[in-house]
Amino acid sequence: MSENLLLELEPTPAVAVSLENIENLELAVRSRGGEVGLAVKGMKGSVVAFEKIWRRIVMAVARGETTKWHAERLSLLSAFEKRLRLLKDTHTLATWLIHLGIVDVPDPEALLAEIVGMKRLKAGVFDHWQTADDLEDLAARDYPLTAADLDAIGPHRQPPASWYAEEGKPF
Image (tube, rainbow, N blue to C red; front, side):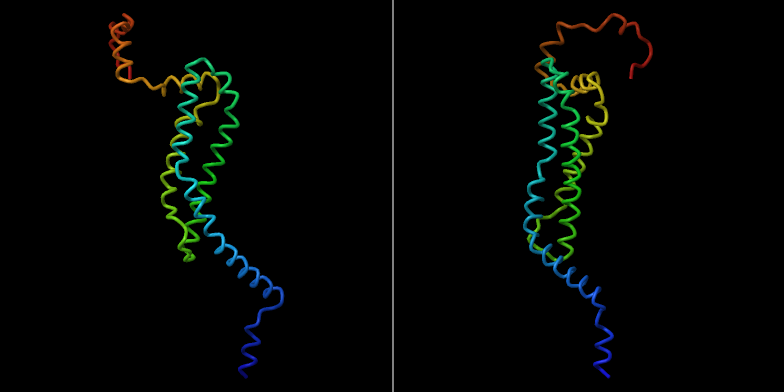
């Protein structure tokens, strides 16, 4: 009688192969936990890297290189979107591995700040940069002027007389 019960638990051959494949897949995933951990560590600093690139572009536009950098927009946007997608995928995968009990994966929650920062940069720059004129407007907005720069420029520049005549709220 007990042999009949055990036979009922035996999966059909096709299901048996699938179950073995799942066990092999789980072993493979567990053995790759270290690689996911390296990916988590490697993804940290993504926002800083893209912000540095943006600052270099702003300075290049100030030097008159708008056309050159606008021509690079699509490749830069592609690299940016790929990094954002990898951040999200790495966070999801690392979270799943921790849920499986794999302990050699760094805390994936650190990637959430990177994802938020990348989304902020996308909304602030890439979503608005469609034309060369857009690039110049964004670069002018983000050009780094120090207080010393403003103090040096300010005394020599006066606002237009029309500003003094305005009675409406400009902002």
